[in-house]
Length: 91
Image 1 (cartoon, helix red, strand yellow):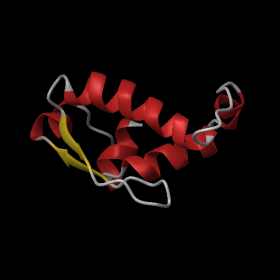
Image 2 (cartoon, helix red, strand yellow; image 1 turned 120 degrees about the horizontal axis):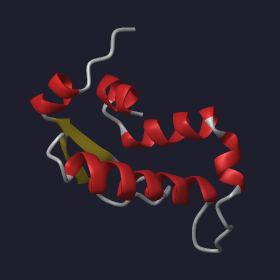
Image 3 (cartoon, helix red, strand yellow; image 1 turned 180 degrees about the horizontal axis):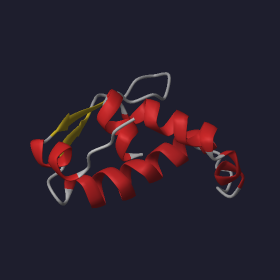
Image 4 (cartoon, rainbow, N blue to C red; image 1 turned 180 degrees about the vertical axis):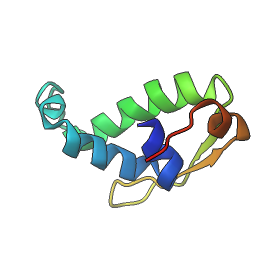
């Protein structure tokens, strides 16, 4: 997840790619009448990984965009220099 967020800086794409890589996780999320399982999964990643880990420790600055009628919220992520210096991936 760290490599992916460094590569494309998109929370929506990170959620889709993580759900594709680990499809069994979606089966563990309870259904809701208010949102989709995929949106709930993206919200979990946003809260736990982005806000409570990366943003808290100063690795990035995240600012959610405006709500769109399609249910997709654009989420801009500004990576900080500390992230690139702490987590180095050679692919």
